[in-house]
Image (tube, rainbow, N blue to C red; front, side, top):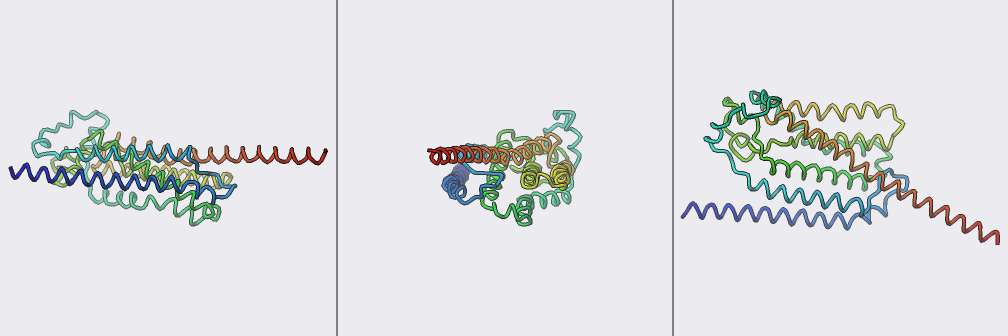
Length: 293
């Protein structure tokens, strides 16, 4: 009876936590939607990006759906027991990933954590160092938030949906920890570290390329954008936290989010300028017509 009561308390706590997070994300969603016209009204016409309801509502709503779905799925992950771990067989893993089960290095994992924690600073550094970007800090701040939110939501949903066991769990030399027998042991796919660093790297490179399309440094920036998340991917594999396929998926998905969110808003800005030019041409034509009469 006591065990059932404890389980019920734990379940109610999880539901309360889930409900609180859902409310928080919903409120942030409403706040962001309310801010879109305020930011759009303040931005410069020459900015390469523009916010709009047509672009931002689908992005934020999709992120919110994946985030809430991911929270629900990850809450249902059950920790591995010692018997579960003992029954694991590396031969059940595909040949491409199988060799990773012998890797484990906590020092490398700590370094990869540093890359994860500093990744959101990449676009901040670009904005602070560049005069053109500083003038659009509100728009770029909104785009950064969207990119971070979308990436995190996709990572959380994927981890909750696939529940893939980490490679280090197969390694008998690895001591027990939340990463081996806790919930953290079953969230291998896909790599959140790699996805977030890739997302912020390609996002920052896209910003630089759009604000400085003729700069000779753009090749260096794109090269770093590709190399930094690849380095983090290698670290996560070497640490025993992820399989090769985990980090490859994280690299590609994170990079795609970081690249395409600015691309979408660039297209919005181009359409806005095109409409503005049509209105200007029409207005000038009517003015000339009135003077001719």
